[in-house]
Length: 207
Image 1 (cartoon, one colour):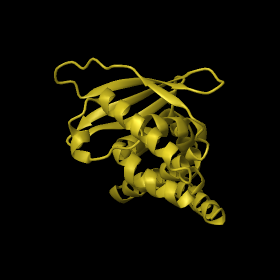
Image 2 (cartoon, helix red, strand yellow; image 1 turned 90 degrees about the vertical axis):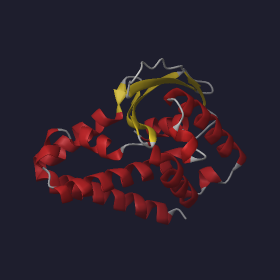
Image 3 (tube, helix red, strand yellow; image 1 turned 30 degrees about the vertical axis):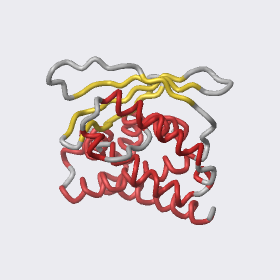
Image 4 (tube, one colour; image 1 turned 45 degrees about the horizontal axis):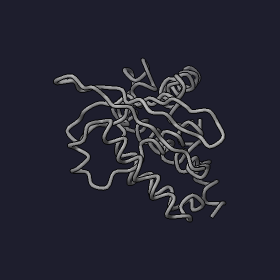
């Protein structure tokens, strides 16, 4: 999972200026931000070895381009309907924190991958699309990746990522379903909080 998240981080990258991002077509957004993030990583050699800087970078520059409420809703599945407003808020917060920390850890494995982004032909009024990319690995086979994206007032946002046909949301849904069957929604929230605490502790020990 960490490798898949690393690849999706590199392929989506970060945006310099939210106003410009609002006006971009989804494939153009992915292409331009991909070029920028790769350039940034290559220039800042300290970035991939500094957990704190990675965490701040991912939290501030990358994940604002994900729709976490929709991602969480899809990952939790049917039990989301029975969750209270407070439980839903906690689920979104904990899931977002998990992805932030997982991305930050995965980024340390960056090793000069490059990305090809395929053009998207949007129809008039279309508000959802798939941006297809290919991750080119030094010494390894290319990896296909797809971003499910939706148009929002703030610009196009990601609500699922598939790597070699494997959906991140679907993968988490299986894990979440197991936790809900064991301890309900509160049990799932507790599991996510505990996992986040472990990742936070591990990051602190590595400083």
